[in-house]
Image (cartoon, rainbow, N blue to C red; front, top):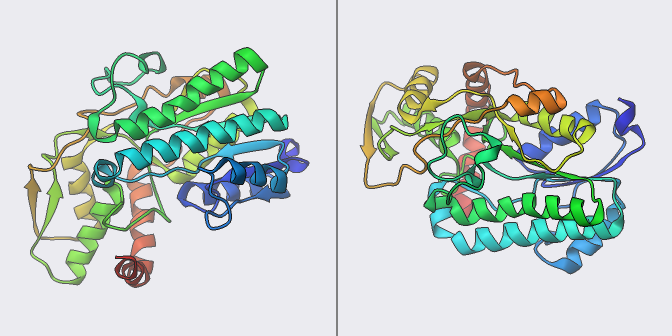
Length: 322
């Protein structure tokens, strides 16, 4: 608790899905000085705005969560934007942190940085053994540069930073916009909307054969806080729950939990993405004592309840935005 009490903390993306839980965890740990830059006030792709955010926040610790991100579809439509935005945000935030003499920089990369055919479970040592899956490679590579920068800056400047590689996150507050959401919120929305509208079936992308690993957002927030407190190296660290589930089994579980009784049509003209994904999470436990606590079924139930309670409002927002 004492670790945070006198620290000034800058959390980029602190108003977002994961960021809001990280901020909640900081509050729980008695952190009294948290600065959350809003995108309308600071464009972190622009170096002048990055300098300004450091001047305004005057941080001891930076937790960099801000990202341009989305599911397979939106990744395929915006490869250039996702590459540039994520690369520039990360590079400039870390460089300015170094120049400002901060104590610690915690960066969030992504499981998309791993090579397409990484042996399962993914070990950190495999990060450079091949090219990432094509549909999200520009995003994955841009985020992977955070690791390169962290290691280079530690070597040359003694700059204390670490880089975490989380699996797909899910939970209350996730992005349910059908244009840009990831697989879990997309499937929950399809099933619940189909139940509400009495529809006889839903269409799901791909074959259902790939496997994914999912981490409940509150567990991810805890991992980030523990790394900030206890991990002072630039070796990459996986953050996950240590299990895999096929998309087919995932949809069956969501169908059961949402009460959807209709048919599923698989649109195999759409890409599957990476064939399998599951992390070896042993290093996070060894290095800073992180182990995921939330069971997958429990996490899904909470996410489904959250969406049900806010469905009308979220759909109105989505319609307004398109």
